[in-house]
Image (cartoon, rainbow, N blue to C red; front, side, top):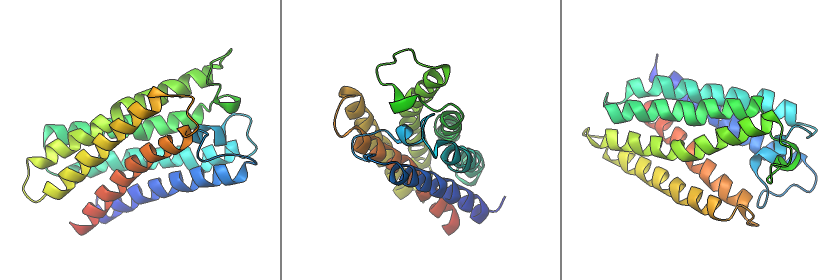
Length: 205
Protein backbone atom coordinates (compact mmCIF):
# COMPACT_ATOMS: atom_id res chain seq x y z
CA UNK A 1 0.00 0.00 0.00
CA UNK A 2 1.13 3.54 -0.76
CA UNK A 3 2.98 5.21 2.12
CA UNK A 4 0.80 8.33 1.91
CA UNK A 5 -2.35 6.24 2.33
CA UNK A 6 -0.88 4.47 5.34
CA UNK A 7 0.13 7.84 6.75
CA UNK A 8 -3.43 9.13 6.33
CA UNK A 9 -4.82 6.09 8.17
CA UNK A 10 -2.56 6.76 11.16
CA UNK A 11 -3.31 10.48 11.31
CA UNK A 12 -7.06 9.83 10.97
CA UNK A 13 -6.90 7.32 13.83
CA UNK A 14 -5.14 9.85 16.04
CA UNK A 15 -7.56 12.58 15.00
CA UNK A 16 -10.57 10.50 16.05
CA UNK A 17 -8.96 9.67 19.39
CA UNK A 18 -8.09 13.29 20.18
CA UNK A 19 -11.51 14.53 19.05
CA UNK A 20 -13.34 11.95 21.17
CA UNK A 21 -11.24 12.65 24.26
CA UNK A 22 -11.78 16.41 23.96
CA UNK A 23 -15.48 16.16 23.12
CA UNK A 24 -16.14 13.73 25.96
CA UNK A 25 -14.74 16.10 28.53
CA UNK A 26 -16.43 19.19 27.11
CA UNK A 27 -19.85 17.54 26.87
CA UNK A 28 -19.87 16.38 30.49
CA UNK A 29 -20.88 18.92 33.10
CA UNK A 30 -18.27 19.49 35.82
CA UNK A 31 -15.79 17.13 34.17
CA UNK A 32 -12.13 17.91 34.86
CA UNK A 33 -9.41 17.21 32.29
CA UNK A 34 -6.89 17.58 35.11
CA UNK A 35 -8.24 15.26 37.78
CA UNK A 36 -10.38 12.69 35.92
CA UNK A 37 -9.46 9.77 33.69
CA UNK A 38 -10.29 9.88 29.98
CA UNK A 39 -12.41 6.74 30.47
CA UNK A 40 -14.71 8.59 32.85
CA UNK A 41 -15.92 10.74 29.93
CA UNK A 42 -17.32 7.68 28.13
CA UNK A 43 -18.24 5.48 31.10
CA UNK A 44 -21.28 3.22 30.86
CA UNK A 45 -23.67 5.77 32.36
CA UNK A 46 -22.54 8.91 30.53
CA UNK A 47 -25.00 10.58 28.17
CA UNK A 48 -22.72 10.59 25.13
CA UNK A 49 -20.62 7.57 26.05
CA UNK A 50 -22.07 5.25 23.42
CA UNK A 51 -21.61 7.84 20.66
CA UNK A 52 -18.01 8.54 21.70
CA UNK A 53 -17.17 4.84 21.81
CA UNK A 54 -18.92 3.97 18.54
CA UNK A 55 -17.71 6.88 16.42
CA UNK A 56 -14.54 7.81 18.27
CA UNK A 57 -12.55 5.30 20.26
CA UNK A 58 -13.44 2.05 18.51
CA UNK A 59 -12.77 3.26 14.93
CA UNK A 60 -9.69 5.10 16.22
CA UNK A 61 -8.29 1.87 17.65
CA UNK A 62 -9.04 0.00 14.43
CA UNK A 63 -7.27 2.65 12.34
CA UNK A 64 -4.22 2.78 14.61
CA UNK A 65 -3.99 -1.01 14.57
CA UNK A 66 -4.17 -1.00 10.77
CA UNK A 67 -1.56 1.75 10.58
CA UNK A 68 0.91 -0.16 12.77
CA UNK A 69 0.47 -3.42 10.85
CA UNK A 70 1.06 -1.66 7.52
CA UNK A 71 3.67 0.91 8.54
CA UNK A 72 6.35 -1.50 9.72
CA UNK A 73 6.66 -2.82 6.16
CA UNK A 74 7.78 0.65 5.04
CA UNK A 75 10.63 0.82 7.54
CA UNK A 76 13.88 -1.19 7.67
CA UNK A 77 12.91 -4.86 8.31
CA UNK A 78 14.65 -5.45 11.63
CA UNK A 79 13.26 -7.77 14.30
CA UNK A 80 12.94 -5.04 16.99
CA UNK A 81 11.10 -2.74 14.57
CA UNK A 82 8.66 -5.47 13.58
CA UNK A 83 8.11 -6.50 17.21
CA UNK A 84 7.59 -2.88 18.22
CA UNK A 85 4.99 -2.13 15.57
CA UNK A 86 3.17 -5.39 16.28
CA UNK A 87 3.28 -4.63 20.00
CA UNK A 88 1.89 -1.14 19.45
CA UNK A 89 -0.89 -2.52 17.26
CA UNK A 90 -1.92 -4.93 20.03
CA UNK A 91 -1.30 -2.94 23.20
CA UNK A 92 -2.42 0.45 21.91
CA UNK A 93 -4.59 -0.10 18.83
CA UNK A 94 -6.52 -3.23 19.80
CA UNK A 95 -6.52 -2.25 23.47
CA UNK A 96 -8.26 1.02 22.53
CA UNK A 97 -10.93 -0.98 20.69
CA UNK A 98 -11.38 -3.23 23.73
CA UNK A 99 -11.82 -0.29 26.12
CA UNK A 100 -14.44 1.06 23.72
CA UNK A 101 -16.40 -2.18 23.72
CA UNK A 102 -16.00 -2.58 27.49
CA UNK A 103 -16.42 0.85 29.13
CA UNK A 104 -15.78 1.38 32.80
CA UNK A 105 -18.48 1.69 35.45
CA UNK A 106 -19.74 5.04 36.67
CA UNK A 107 -16.76 7.11 37.79
CA UNK A 108 -14.54 4.23 36.62
CA UNK A 109 -14.98 2.58 40.04
CA UNK A 110 -11.38 3.11 41.30
CA UNK A 111 -11.97 1.04 44.44
CA UNK A 112 -13.46 -1.84 42.39
CA UNK A 113 -16.58 -2.12 44.55
CA UNK A 114 -18.68 -4.86 42.90
CA UNK A 115 -17.11 -4.14 39.51
CA UNK A 116 -18.80 -5.24 36.32
CA UNK A 117 -17.11 -7.61 33.90
CA UNK A 118 -16.71 -4.67 31.53
CA UNK A 119 -14.86 -2.72 34.23
CA UNK A 120 -12.44 -5.60 34.84
CA UNK A 121 -11.75 -6.05 31.12
CA UNK A 122 -11.35 -2.28 30.73
CA UNK A 123 -8.82 -2.15 33.58
CA UNK A 124 -6.86 -5.10 32.20
CA UNK A 125 -6.64 -3.48 28.77
CA UNK A 126 -5.43 -0.26 30.38
CA UNK A 127 -2.76 -2.04 32.42
CA UNK A 128 -1.48 -3.85 29.33
CA UNK A 129 -1.43 -0.61 27.34
CA UNK A 130 0.63 1.32 29.86
CA UNK A 131 2.92 -1.64 30.50
CA UNK A 132 3.77 -2.57 26.91
CA UNK A 133 3.05 0.37 24.58
CA UNK A 134 6.09 2.34 25.84
CA UNK A 135 8.31 -0.72 25.44
CA UNK A 136 6.97 -1.24 21.92
CA UNK A 137 7.92 2.32 20.95
CA UNK A 138 11.41 1.86 22.37
CA UNK A 139 11.79 -1.40 20.41
CA UNK A 140 10.98 0.46 17.20
CA UNK A 141 13.62 3.01 18.10
CA UNK A 142 16.22 0.31 18.71
CA UNK A 143 15.40 -1.30 15.38
CA UNK A 144 15.61 1.98 13.47
CA UNK A 145 18.95 2.79 15.08
CA UNK A 146 20.52 -0.02 13.07
CA UNK A 147 19.66 1.62 9.76
CA UNK A 148 21.35 4.69 8.26
CA UNK A 149 19.07 7.66 7.74
CA UNK A 150 16.79 6.85 10.67
CA UNK A 151 18.87 8.21 13.55
CA UNK A 152 16.54 11.13 14.27
CA UNK A 153 13.41 8.96 14.19
CA UNK A 154 15.17 6.43 16.43
CA UNK A 155 16.01 9.14 18.99
CA UNK A 156 12.40 10.39 18.91
CA UNK A 157 11.13 6.87 19.60
CA UNK A 158 13.49 6.49 22.55
CA UNK A 159 12.41 9.88 23.91
CA UNK A 160 8.68 9.18 23.56
CA UNK A 161 8.99 5.66 24.94
CA UNK A 162 11.24 6.65 27.82
CA UNK A 163 9.12 9.67 28.68
CA UNK A 164 5.94 7.63 28.72
CA UNK A 165 7.54 5.05 31.05
CA UNK A 166 8.43 7.79 33.53
CA UNK A 167 4.89 9.17 33.37
CA UNK A 168 3.36 5.71 33.84
CA UNK A 169 5.48 5.27 36.97
CA UNK A 170 4.24 8.66 38.18
CA UNK A 171 0.65 7.66 37.38
CA UNK A 172 0.90 4.41 39.35
CA UNK A 173 2.77 5.94 42.28
CA UNK A 174 -0.25 7.98 43.37
CA UNK A 175 -3.58 6.83 41.86
CA UNK A 176 -5.43 9.39 44.04
CA UNK A 177 -3.45 12.37 42.75
CA UNK A 178 -5.43 15.49 41.88
CA UNK A 179 -3.49 15.54 38.60
CA UNK A 180 -4.26 11.96 37.52
CA UNK A 181 -6.15 13.09 34.41
CA UNK A 182 -3.35 15.40 33.32
CA UNK A 183 -0.71 12.71 33.75
CA UNK A 184 -2.77 10.19 31.77
CA UNK A 185 -3.26 12.70 28.98
CA UNK A 186 0.47 13.35 28.84
CA UNK A 187 1.07 9.61 28.41
CA UNK A 188 -1.56 9.36 25.68
CA UNK A 189 -0.11 12.47 24.02
CA UNK A 190 3.26 10.74 23.69
CA UNK A 191 1.62 7.63 22.20
CA UNK A 192 -0.35 9.54 19.57
CA UNK A 193 2.59 11.87 18.91
CA UNK A 194 4.67 8.83 18.00
CA UNK A 195 2.00 7.58 15.59
CA UNK A 196 1.86 11.02 13.95
CA UNK A 197 5.67 11.21 13.81
CA UNK A 198 5.81 7.85 12.01
CA UNK A 199 3.00 8.92 9.69
CA UNK A 200 4.86 12.10 8.75
CA UNK A 201 8.05 10.10 8.17
CA UNK A 202 6.14 7.85 5.77
CA UNK A 203 4.82 10.82 3.81
CA UNK A 204 8.34 12.16 3.41
CA UNK A 205 9.68 8.86 2.07
